[in-house]
Image 1 (cartoon, one colour):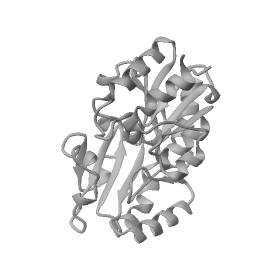
Image 2: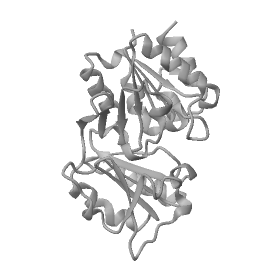
Image 3: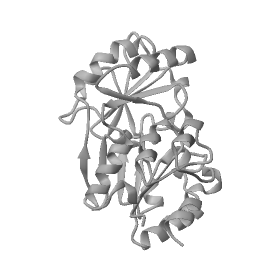
Length: 272
């Protein structure tokens, strides 16, 4: 019996416009929730950039954010789980990143900060349009991450590299480093969290919080950062529009996000 449904946002729950949830998916989620199933968003975004998703689906119980660095309980209105990296871990790699990237973000205490300095102005062309629209709203520009480090450390660092070959080389180098977990959610991006911090670990923590296990969870996603969650869940499902690695990691494959793949999976595996 499925007790929790955890869904990625972009490319999964959200329509191709990255903003809206289809009525068919809303209806299926409402029925699942009425049957007693808990609902969670599981996103690479931080809390300030989740947007109006919960106003579209008020039944959402939890938000797993920043690739699993934290879990927000909407009913208690508080963060119930954190697994952040200390600032010195991020600082160790910032010189390497600054030499290669024209856009760098650090997610700190639920807020996304983008780095701009004298030597490296932000290359706005690197940012996917949906995230570019958040600048000035959910994303704050700073000239030094040290000015905004909070008491809880850093949730995630994400950066974009224009040259595909340099991006591949940087990804390979960082994956060989200890103390961090490296993944990607969109093209030409690299992101890392503390080692042991990913959507799969957060899913297991949330299942424990609600008195369940990951075997009783459904997880849906479309990209590399969703793979740990898909592997952890008893019902690990890749979207029809997912990349091949994500599909290979999944137990099941549903329709695309443009074809109401979330609803299709819910009706096939979670409710009658």
